[in-house]
Image (cartoon, rainbow over all chains, first blue to last red):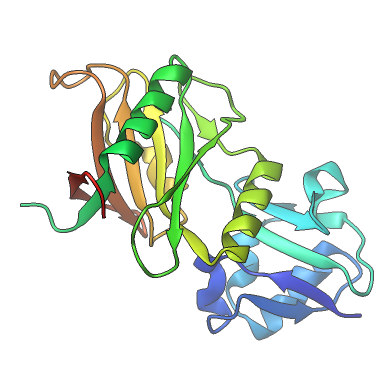
Length: 92
Length: 144
């Protein structure tokens, strides 16, 4: 089951500079565990414990997975996953 | 003497300041995109502050996706990521530093308060790389 994953600039240090990689998994959690086997270090930048990091946005076919099932969102063959760090900050 | 430099047109500089002024007392935020690798800010893209807060900003997640898709299609990158501070000086806060994820971008801060006695609308630029902040000179030009 192949899922295309688009990687943001800041995480391309784990993918030899590639903008997109392929992975497998029934859920996002499994997909990120699978990516970790070939791109060591990437999982911890996306996942914190059993949740997505608060300031990392993950989209499944252009939908923010926070409005789906978060890290337990189910995947199908041919899905596209996009990872984008939030652009955030402020004086607080 | 500051290490780096941001060169920006007067028109773009004024648009960023105007956006900060308009959204006050909330923090304003946005991007100036430019051709990949050129380091030249060209396309002004004001963003909605989804947090609508005087102390925090965050791009709306759907807007963020659209923005990055669009830049990708146009071979652009975020040359400037700007936001305003509404009660403190135009210097990156601890929050700004911990969420800074574009080491190639100039982080521009505009203060809508006269927090450091230097007057309102101080416009300053920084690199934020792996938690380290480096201020750079801002050179305002008529055209590139």
